[in-house]
Length: 331
Ligand SMILES: [Zn+2]
Image (tube, rainbow, N blue to C red; front, side, top):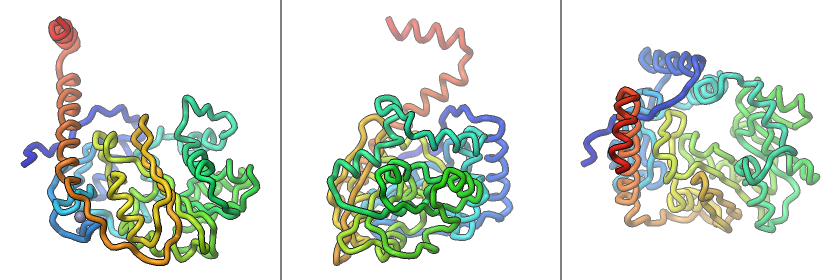
């Protein structure tokens, strides 16, 4: 039994973040945002255990772990129309961003100035994909924002298209000359050699169903690329927009059940991100057993919870007392 499920983390959100969070909580309370109970997105069981009952911003939000397979996910989740509305309205980016949507976006387009030693994650996907040696001519990115992730591929002469919900970001991308379409993945047409989902799969409902639908748009011998924040370093940042917290094992299981064969998988030490490249397969794999996954998740959560308690104490104690305590503890 975990006992304490009240999530706490010191956050440094701006006034605009706080205003957006208040709007979100009010819309949850009023039923304006619809919620649905879900089965485990990996093994379909309904045998879950609550890990946290609110997210890092104090939004009432349940994060659970599947007792059968160890998958960590939100339950309930926003229903389909509320999810679309959440991203299309930019409420999501107002909660998580610095509060200046278009200013944040503009800096994202400056890929040529990215220093890989300092800001590695901006080009990790490109380095990983190119390092794998796969051959491809066309790329489509789902949830592309303004299309900044496509820039290095465009510079390589690949045929690139992005899809995104947000009218503001689509307009910003088009202004940069990037081919971005204001549609979600259901509006996707045509076939591509490479489909990219960079920090998207953790936000969508029914990941297996969605990946199977996307697979129809992957050319023969084509590939799927997925990048997600991994579970190990992300448990201390539980947030309402994240429906899934993957490990390498649960991510591989979801991707293979969707009709792909993993060709490479890698976790980035620095931030815990997981990157997967998978080739279109002729069959859907059955569920891969993940023994010990549930116990492993519980141990990570216990560790994360100790960090949260420390942060809580540090914030509540008066500064002089805290300073004295640190001196005593160091002796
Ligand atoms: Zn499960």
